[in-house]
Length: 408
Image 1 (cartoon, rainbow, N blue to C red):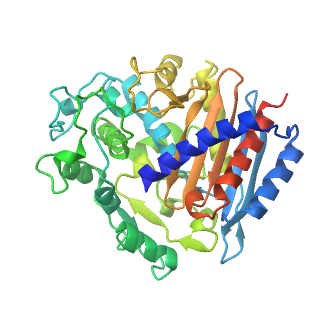
Image 2 (image 1 turned 45 degrees about the vertical axis):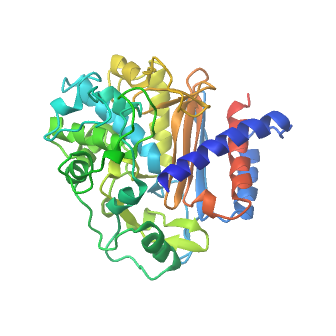
């Protein structure tokens, strides 16, 4: 599902580009006009709810949430409500990894086998996997979707009799005991030749560093490397180096660390709520955060990219975080993807950011360093599950907030 959702999001972005070039869209000039447009989009949708933020010239120009965090209990989605942001989580791996580089633990050129307590070798390549390969998705590590969902589990105490829960269990094979392997154990099981989940098909049939394959497991492996060298669990380390300095008080890797009343239910669609779940490879896509916190975060990233901040990293380290890493663009990269920083994606339109999609969530984050402007949307629903008009409505939402972002 993660792979299919990423493909879906890329198709959506391409469709937005095409539709915007063919239609004359109404310009949205004010926050009030944007609010009216987004409210209409929500009322037409089958989403549980969504949150949108827009930054213009480095300042917050818009931030609002629509719909429900819990439909059954009639709890509104607010700017302080946390929800799963899926693969946008990877940019937090990126910052944490560059912090470890800044502290002298390794470099992007470090072979992963010089750090790991077990060996990881692509059976189809003689070239070693370097850290730079993980952060640009060129390591050759593949996600086996059938195996990957074995590392998910519905949290203990959740209602597993619902339609949504039964789909997760029967269609995806997700466990129901709330238990997952520790990150290190999953990595060894999947990547080491002695592991119970190991298969030579877990790797591309290509030399390391030559082909692009978007790898959730490769991303989580980068987080595990941070754990090893810092001797600190990744969730604790990222909290220390990112969430606490930025005062992101509604952000955590575990639901148990947040106020349960301020954590959104995730939905396939508005009629199909889902039970809360966890995963062994949580760094690659399980961060819970709010639009309020993500706005704080993106403001800092805009300042960082434009040399105005050294709050989390030195200015040199921030440059390392964002600088394009691929000298040669692999042919497998989607057309609208230009290059990668350290997990940060450069688009061909000059924006930097990431998208996310997983069970019950669809998310976008992106900013233009030249204009110091950007946008975020967090949807607590699966767009591909939310009815025939869902793609059109999401396109409408994205076009609306981008129109406002571009307005003078």
